Image (tube, rainbow over all chains, first blue to last red):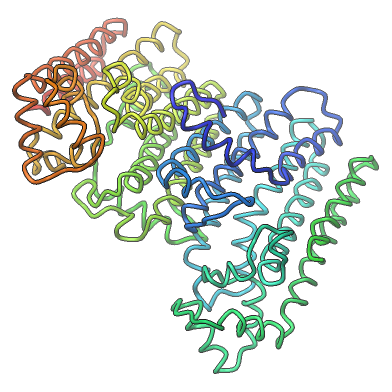
Length: 301
Length: 301
């Protein structure tokens, strides 16, 4: 994160990094490499790479969403400005490529470059899909795969690749990361309607206020009466929200039982992640990854 | 530039790419590779990589500068929104890494990852240095090396590296690109005070209005009387600009003859670029690169 020439860079990154966060993604890389018996030094570079890519996307997301809070602190775009968030994000993104290049592995570079492109593509897709009531569960899954699961699966995959294990093991690591990432994002979207602000650091209804169509609403729109459809069109598509709309939205989610169905979907993805683990060697880290899949959905309660 | 999932991406990129531009940077890569006798396919990937990185930085620059025009067209941030410019820029940046990874050359990846980091660092440095009257010619040169010359020198350097030529030739290509990039940016900054809007696509005084301290002003500030210093502090540092300030700024640049001195500096860098070429083989492309150095400063007239 250091920069000899531009002290603004470590200021902005330190603000975000020191605020904490779960560090799930770099941990996945370290765990995968160790599980595969890797003994070199580069799993650390790759873990840092993955967290840098994540941090860069957070900086840019906060500009895109005009967010005011992240990890319980004011966002960098608020403390400094949008310019700093955009450019420091670019710097972290470039640094992540420097770090991964140090591994000397073209295959690793290929995986992480692809993941970066998929993330950006998912974010752009979300821009147009989020406020469009025609967005269905398939498109939602595409967005989620892009904005979240692509980095989870790259994080686990490169851990195996750097260790030089066979393709079937790399595939299992990828499948685990992919399913875990999808479960993680679905839970995130669920907590936005059901969470406890103190525990999650998110306010209930942020996605609704930002007019982001997520799984609980997509399911409710699919079963909406004409009158309900008009409500969603006004609040999400047109963004003309009034007092009491969030309460009405929550009432519709409860009426169609979509929060519980969203929870069921999240649990199914976590199960899928655990099934992928059965192709991996028995190891204390495999057990830990199994617990992690449970943890991701345990956040619901 | 294509994207199966997010049609917004080709829309935004096509708008910028179809607007033209000189395509100097990719041309430098193609020329360097051919000059070095390269016969493989990857100089094309690298030329596209270099132009994608450049296009990504233009998209982000227009957000950072809140620009309304680029290449004679409304900017993407104006036609779509800042969100699209940030995220499509990220996508192009990621795509550039996918393209360079296809070359399979870690050395090429290293050069372009370093250039990307230097560009972002230069842009962040500019954020803090541009409105600070303490910024001197050394810091200006650092900013210019970052935001412009780093990509020029990487463009020429990778052309040689991909061709597998000896280190001295690669070094000469780097030196040429570096000096050419510095000359190019100094001319750009000069034209901002002396240009013809029709020929350059820039309005006279944009940098002044955006409070960007560039070489002509840095030289004038260094020789300012107390009263002149107060003028620059008010207009550039504090940004309290009034009618007639641009005319007053131009009068001060003429009084201290800094536009002519800036031109002399640009010509010296172009000469330096030509000196670097003497270490390269005699070749029609070497002659063309020599002409290019002349062209860059010929834009002044």
